[in-house]
Image (tube, rainbow, N blue to C red):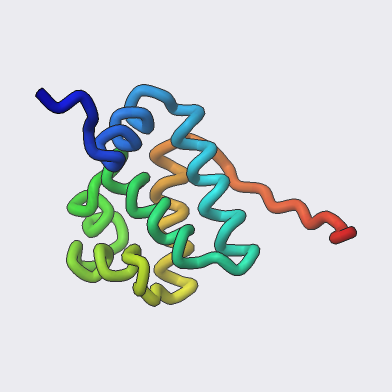
Length: 107
């Protein structure tokens, strides 16, 4: 009997039951993009999409094919800034949050 479950299933379940966790992941994805770690940010966004709106609904909301969105949010994806903005806006609306950015001094 297997006592563990797939990491993605665990993240998906946590996102669905804990809205604060979902918001924290969206915040982390934005921070990672802005701080030069786009690969990890895309993967976090992919998990958020899977657990919230789903790729089919995202395709409708963005007027982009679902397969293109999957590629964009893969580790090797290369979404345009316009596409990223649209994806962030769909997730922001789904999670009912605003995103604010604050620059701080590097010391």
